[in-house]
Image (cartoon, rainbow, N blue to C red; front, top):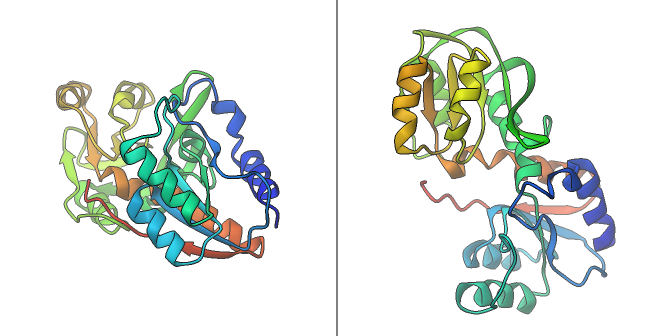
Length: 254
């Protein structure tokens, strides 16, 4: 497959252009010649020297990540930015990035993966950000205890098995909102939507008081652990397209 074909397929499937005005990440092909053949694609949550090295060792032609190198542009190619770009160039490996598009996709995205793992049904888009959404909300098939949901979150790839819980909602949880990564800012939207709980990766100080006053339980399951689902889904998609694939696991514990 040609690199531009792979990029076009991912961009079309993830509706990358719809997020251009709200995402600081430069989504799409961040590093690469735009031409050339692709036989092997690696996938990772983060574009960092460690994951680039693992992808290069696997012989990948392209590394696909959720967190890329360009956030609002690159002014100077020095320091860590130079090291990462140089590692890609030395390995003759392109970098494709999908940040918010891979959060919001209702089938392949991170929130969708969390919802699948928790067992949410009757789902709909959630987590409004300008004209797009970056999460999902749904119902558990049978009401679950806080401990049952926490157990499912602790089993995530890259989890440190110590999901933090701000337990301010009902004892039995029926409706759950999901915004992966750093999604505490959507607590009020979750409450307005009738959610008993919000699942996200990491929190902020204020979410404690907001959750307590709103009567919503918040699960902080780890930024990395809640954002492995999207790249793994893209890995499966590339498999179906006949490409050789490698998933690079590099948990941060955060």
